Image 1 (cartoon, one colour):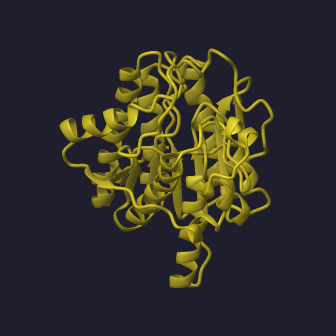
Image 2 (cartoon, helix red, strand yellow):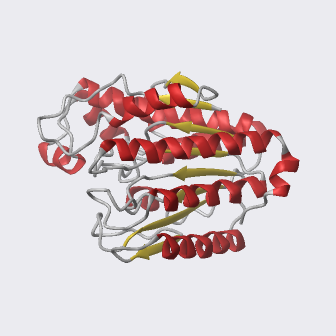
Length: 316
């Protein structure tokens, strides 16, 4: 299984900044040590042309040149720097590369990504460019060119925060299905409308979460037949997350991931997954949750190579 990283581009953040920049390198080191079957590859940078499949030329230019306003930067949550721009491009490039790899081998990943608060013309919530939206649009364009058919894509967003930017970008687009399970009272406080939104109460437990996820994926199955899934495997529904407000255990998050992987395996759907949010009070716990997602991803990759095994473990 291939996985793409961009942690060598580190933002110069002020002391006390709440974004856990260190977790990306920690995750890569943990994967290298414990999951040697994962092929770790440096992410390419997304080009202006790729970004423009989703983002407005004016926003790309202002962001790249540093002419973006102070108010827009406050909404993003990062100070401007060349490293910020390059990291954002590489995060998009990693998801683009993961989608291409998944279409060839069944499953691939981005060690970062999931920047779902970015709109076409602005960023927000630590999200500069929307990697999942750009990768989706590029995959659809490439598929159309090769096969003269429409590629239907499902975005399964299980970050604790609603993917408002992604939902807005794909509104009124029947080729992309956006599903979001998120905290009802959490950021963003002004939600957009996904194809299917499931708002969860503060303190939501493992059992309640799995019941909601099961029902949501059953509804997705009835309404849409994706040929590609992009999965945002956020670690922030964890009870120990500083920004989450839900109460899932690490076992509960593993069960969530397993259910999504099984759902895709049964249907033989290529799956690209990204890490999205994770703000654990103990950063090591966030890394362990994300490492567990990669371990399950490897299992899915093995099942993809052996269709009979997928049928013996049909999942949802």
